[in-house]
Length: 116
Length: 109
Image (cartoon, rainbow over all chains, first blue to last red; front, side, top):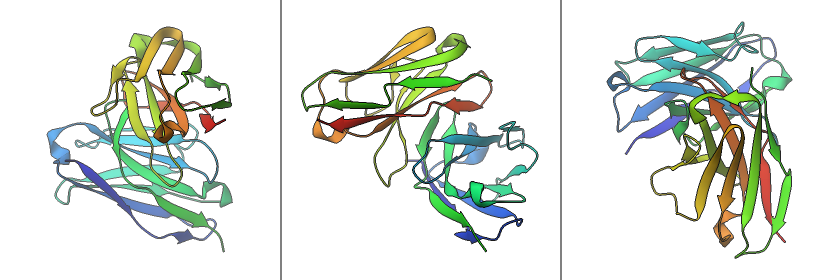
């Protein structure tokens, strides 16, 4: 059974870089699929951030592309998200998920608050 | 960029009733690359439907998806108490990118 778990700081200061890691268990990232990040501001809807293949090929949401970097570490079976120059508008629950276009399964999500 | 508009925003129904949720795309969604998710408070979304009409593993057959082009529908044939939640549609292309609708809340009447 594939499981994903997000980890990282729950509080980030404005203008700094948000960094999260997703650890995958029950499936080797190197075996295939894309792996993605999605976020959800409190009380709002879902926003796709970007996706990565085990080879490192990436796709980003055009609205976030200038600030986003997604990377993969197949040796640790993890992939990571970096979002730079954060503001309060980046406060959200961040989810990682396996993707073939649709997202399944999802991690439980981690709340990241941007505040000084 | 394709914009997805879901309607209604809120659907008030009783257990046992039929729920019909709509997702309309601003342009045609190729190859029916459309998915539906259910989200309950404090939980991650759960995949219900992909490819517009294929049920994900373990999803009860009271959930069905239909549509093509720009108009898609999620139908819950008989609402169970656990079905009251928020539902999102998502379009994806041949590459792994996606846009979500704003969601429809199905609440108990």
